[in-house]
Amino acid sequence: MSAVRRARDERLTNALDQNARDLLRYLERRVGSNDAPDALSDTMIAAWKGAARVPTNPVEARMWMFGIARNVVLNHSRGERRRSRLAERLRESVGVLPANNDAAAGLDVLDAIQRLDPDLAEVIRAVHWDGFSLAEISQYLGLPASTVRSRYHRAKRELAHVLGSQVELIQ
Amino acid sequence: MDPSSSFRDDALNDLLDRAAAPAPLSALMTDAALQEATRAARFEAARDVKSRLGRRLAISGVALALVLGGTGVAAAVTNFEWPSWAQQPDATMQITLPSGAQCEYLIGNLQNADPEIMDAARAFFASAPVPTTAQVDARVVAVHGETLAQTPEGDRDRRYSSGVVGVMADELDADLQQHGFDSAQRPYFEGVITCEGTNQ
Image (cartoon, rainbow over all chains, first blue to last red):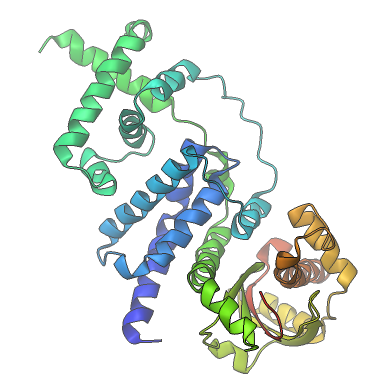
């Protein structure tokens, strides 16, 4: 193996090791706990297939991987799913998940987000669930910052309208 | 700006923050499992990219290497580069795949921070018996929900190979427990299997 390829593989290994848990959380919140191992497996395999393109800057590498994860989510929502041995190993390593006692909490807010245009919903989830800045979102979605900003404000306006009574109650 | 509108915005932000969908899996997953997934994905990617060439080589009768990363992910690799540890493996076994292919199975590259666990694992592999077909079949059922006989013919050899390493991992866990170690600390290990006459 050449030194260049070895360095590149090491860079991707480090980037995946550092971001795997965040990637899994991102995927789990979008495709659910059952399918998240498969989605993570697909994301990691796609990252290795595109290893030649992994950015050298760690922050850019992180955003590059979330861009891949986003595409995996889109494919998942189109019904393109596959069960992999890698995902089976991940499932085996955790075993049975605990029951979620908070499942009912915030269901109406979740429902409101779900009803948004998917592009708007992604920006809301990325900001409020994953803690991304709008600049980071524009990076992994490959969109101009102004587009992401306007999607965010539009999404907030629509949510404020739908969830108006709850917002008033909190005040 | 209307002061009440920024107040409403804060309230909405709070609602959205608190509505984050639960993610129990990512909270419970161990670092070791995630790291193993990263390495296994590398092998899977290599298999996907090269599977077409692999079939062509297999048809012409060239020996094919199956690489098993971590504890159960198989990958067929055609321009296979032998890992350096394969020069001094911790275990060498002869196995026969369901297709009849005769294979040599090497296990090595053990990794664990605890030297006592490493010694125990090496001792296990040095004397570990070759898993029986019944053991491998039980493992295949546990993972895939069907026996080898029920497995599509094209997947049998691969599932059998993965099953062998899965049985070895289970046996290692039991051996570590017998020696007073926590089986959750099982060392990472890799396997390489080279076969003549397989078409997978």
